[in-house]
Image: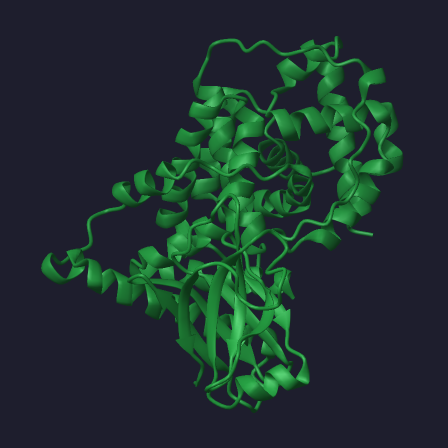
Length: 229
Length: 185
């Protein structure tokens, strides 16, 4: 082609990787490329590099909540866990879910703390109604609390709000949480001080934007004591 | 901070899947399913098909988590690639011809530009990609956009933009060459 000279060209493999990643290949050529990805690590790496170049474009696509039964279908299609009995016990899975969520929260805390943070984080599992709803990690060094939804389901009309309750005291509003992702909230010094002295975290359901009164107005769906790791 | 928290959580959860940790898959589902459903729905255009593919996507994540290499791609990039690939595979498997609206260059969608997207840790990469897309010729950008968002083949793009297949191939290839050169600057 006459006008590629000013832009250079790509080796054939890189071009094929680009075409696969973009998705312009027809059925047969696409299937051939997929076979190569499985067998040829160098080619697979070229494809991953193109996927990484293009993926940020997906930021433009709006999120669409899938219907709730999709997760049930996925969970039902996972291979059966190896051992019966314990593995089928709901209580076991609940504990397992909390343990792994907790581990994820702690590890995540380390990821953005760096290992250098010398004050260990405080952790609370916020549970109520037989369910662990959220896992919260207070990063004392950075004065933030990270809250991860565990088994909390969204409510169309109300939002979960986090409260910090000192021993024997009244709740302080910390911030509004999300059912679909982790939220990190800054803790002002007075709240951080309370968090570090044996306080409890609780979550209530409030109107969008949070409680209008500064105190919980809706039902408290869970609470958990902050403990040092 | 939000972005970093999600990125870290997804990476940690992916690492736990090879050991059979279902809760880890559920965490990833909670954090990413709305984004990934948006991606597959955009390509497939039909809800029930998209729901089916979303299940395949997470079952693929479950099976392939051990292959994820954090040194090669961010977790969100890896997940988006799986979602796009499963959706495109489904399109190619359904051999019925789809009704595809013709694209006139004049209707080029105004580039939405980078958006603050809290579910993606790649906001910066997004700004860089948009900067490079803006430097492509309008016809190249339009063709790339239809390929990326609608999952069109070369043939479909050529038909939609009323140009010969060979012309479409050279548009796309030149656009990819320029895009790579620009992103590597």
